[in-house]
Amino acid sequence: ERRAMVSTVLPPGQADQCTHELECLQTGQYLRVRLNEDSCMLSCSDLGIVDEYYNFCGMHMPALPAHIEHSCTDICGLFFLLATLCILAWISKQAIQNGSLLRLHTSTDYEGNMCGRSPGVEDKLFSYWCMHSNESSVNLKYPICVDECPQSNASSHVCYSEKLRNATLIPDYPSKSFGLSPYCWPKDYALREQVKEERSQEIGGVFRGILLIPDNAWLAFAVTCVSASIMGYLYFKMLEKCVDFMILVFVLAATNLSVICGLLAFYTAYSG
Image 1: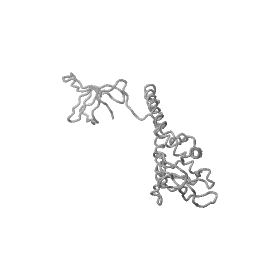
Image 2: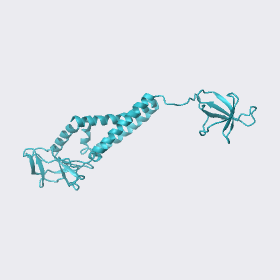
Image 3: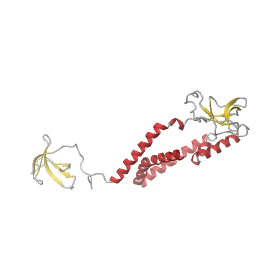
Image 4: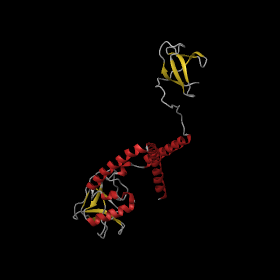
């Protein structure tokens, strides 16, 4: 089987009655042939072919300089890509069956109910941290779901007390929600700093800066805009200088970073 593409359409009236010049894709050899496009018959004196049937696979542009026939050049890389995609599909299946995307932007109480979502707390959209029984600090281990953030010390809520080891009525403190945050943040500066410090230790250092957004929302917006502009400019400059390296990095990141993060999440979940 020979595969070829049309490189030149010859003017009519050739001495050898040839109509086209073909490039053989396997060898790069150029052949003068006579094509009957109506009956798909080909004749070529160089190959000793007379009215042989050919299979038309579509129109082709003339070959570019240094043209070569493309084929799969990295079987090993293809195997790892397919293996990565299979692992990613398995992780996605486990996440869909056992997880919930709502937990990314929905707060919970100490019993694991999602505020505003779970049965019994559908109308309670906010998560509120009660005071300790000594009323000196906020108890972050046992939040409750509330329909609105308490505004003063005059109200009370039934909260779990670590000291008494049961639910008891504990006075509220003034709090408020910030933007899209599903939490009731203390208005008192000292209590708010305590909440930020304890939560930053729970979720790790990566997200510590996010906890500053309630106080510095305008600053976060400005920093985001400036950072996005700078990163976009640097990205296009890097594309001008090293486009091959950038493509390789982003392809590897797209196929492997999510798998690594998923495996890390599984390890963290099963190792406690």
